[in-house]
Image 1 (cartoon, one colour):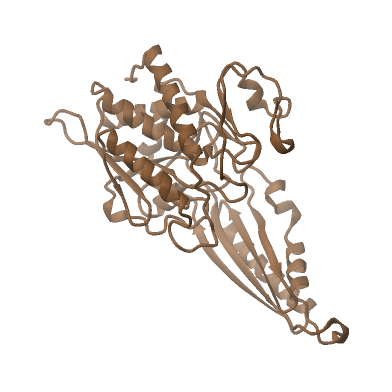
Image 2: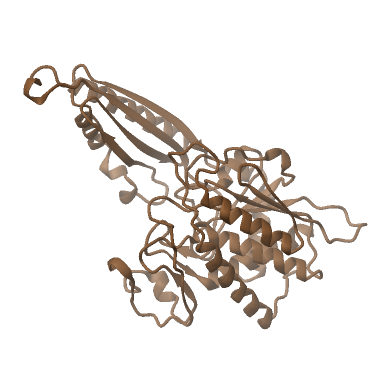
Length: 420
């Protein structure tokens, strides 16, 4: 049975979502993949402390761990004689990606969007003529950046949806639910895969991450992911005396990167096609390095890609006699599909909840990963739910408020569905 929310309550929920999202978006939480510590940046502590304070103020038992995980628990409100249902969790991450600045974010709220181009700073344009989702947002409420930073809908929209849903459940005791856990995590964007995750403190056997995009998108599978570091060892000498002696490590790295298949890059692939992506490259004559991320939906496909990278290394060594290439390939996360499919009721209840509130959903693969992949490895199946954000990790990032409202309602409905 659907949780009934009247028009006035829905307006209040929508306003609360915008207010919370804007507040969270202004907190600088960019993470740093080059830092091994968790969290990798101090700004994530600022948002974690804010959320801990807000959850506590709502009357929720909350904890902030030594490594910046925010954990909160809402007890069941079912009658004592009712058999206790399973604890379910809802999770989102604190950090934003490093590709674009997340400092001094200035969210711009547009109510009743008029459907025209929006010209932002530094030549950034939101063009409905080139963005069908933006064109379809005419008459609705959107939030966008001023063009100088990303917005942070990935994943502060997920955080806002979860906190607002928790607030609603606490103030509407007529909505019956079992025990609920809230989990906010650091450093998701670094690809570390939940380092220092306090598994011993988690009672949820099922979790839903809110870390998706356009409204209605539900996801149960993601890439297998590897990070690959390559070192190129050359031999330095004065260029004037280089004949027959110099082994240019910087040129070795450039040659290696040129071997990466252009038709298997992120910009050339979609759907279920994996890719190689060069993230950075640096060096000099004596030593150079580069970092890649490698993605594929199957384990066999990933093995093929790692083998190809090894063959490129040997080819570069053959091109540069006396040079050496050392590869370090490490898994980051694995496709979460198998773990989720082992408990089909987890996704069945998500679809039921979406149908109950009238969400026209689609099921698609994540061309990336979420904390849900690592949770699945830890034995907690965790499908991913949309949050309404678009153009993640860019200065053109924007959020459709009607979608984040639907995500919030879906959390509320899931809590009720699992209580039955």
